[in-house]
Image 1 (tube, rainbow, N blue to C red):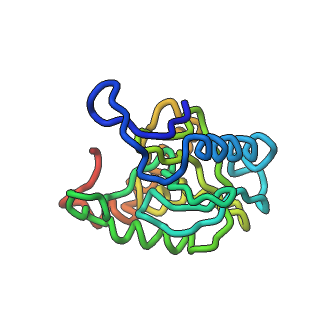
Image 2: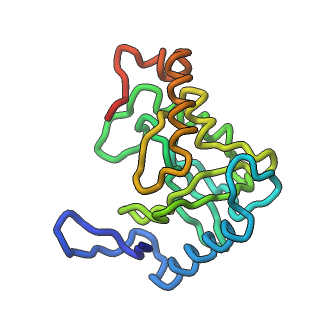
Length: 193
């Protein structure tokens, strides 16, 4: 279901989206991204690089970026991973949160062309676009890289589960090797939530 606004905690109560997009514009963006994925911009890590349907504007934290999609800046929540909090309002900075944000900035500097691959549910309750992110130049599966390098953990976001086994395997290996947060945060682990 594509949502142009987000729900507050009261059943049936709509609150306006924080973005300035109209519902029609949000629908057009979602359809454009879905069409790009359906026509070959998607396909997973083995699909071959070189195709992009978005450009990174900035990194928000270790699992969220802002990307320009068809001329619209979209907040993208990377599916299947969860990184320690570093900018969440009214929440403390978690162990390895700043490091996770920096690692994602290193992987996706501003201006990086990326390919976004959607799954079953295109948006979350905060109206963020949910996507698997692949760097266009080398087809690096960025969601997996964040987990494999120890800067995030695999996290299941049903019904978006296309890469769950891949991400869980990378998470098990990183944890077993004590990569990144798995050794740095042993006294104060951010996971499980």
